[in-house]
Length: 275
Image (cartoon, rainbow, N blue to C red; front, top):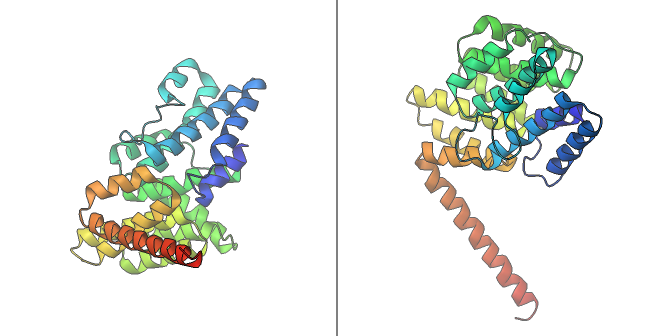
């Protein structure tokens, strides 16, 4: 169950799939029956993370809501159980912080995870944790911490890992930004069908170009918006609409075209039935 959940997050599979929420609930219930509270809490934390991405209106990087309250749980445990839970929840929050560009949260989560930069026995857990320590670390100037993660993914990429190559190129682009490096990262993410990383790479490229006064930034931001939309991250797309006024016109044009196409299809269907 835990490996499945990490694989789901790592692959960027749809957040709004009707399959994922019931599975996480079932995994959590099984852990409850087996009296494995630290495993159970992982599944509830994952559910809360996905809720934050899909429909949370604010406080996206805090794991507190309908299904989980991180602070309350951490107060109820101690010792190794608390340490391992904090490792896992900090990883999920770091992902959220990177997506929503919450620099304060990124700094705090990087501090929490600074002792967890070595790969562990569960490779898919290492992938998510080290991937976002690297991305957030480079963004926040914590290069020593981030470089350790970059070396890990570089080694995997050289060995031919198709899953390591996209995030390796993305890290390189964040570490030493240029349009060419971001374009390569976007290409690699697209080839691997990692829509969530492709969205993030497009957005980071757009932010980089905007900071340098390049109007091409808009095409990357628009691409990021639709990729986040396809991923099912409605909280993120709503946040982007608030940040970038030009997105409103871009999305309205798409919706009008989509509405017109739907109207034409309905008309064609009616004509086919002889009205």
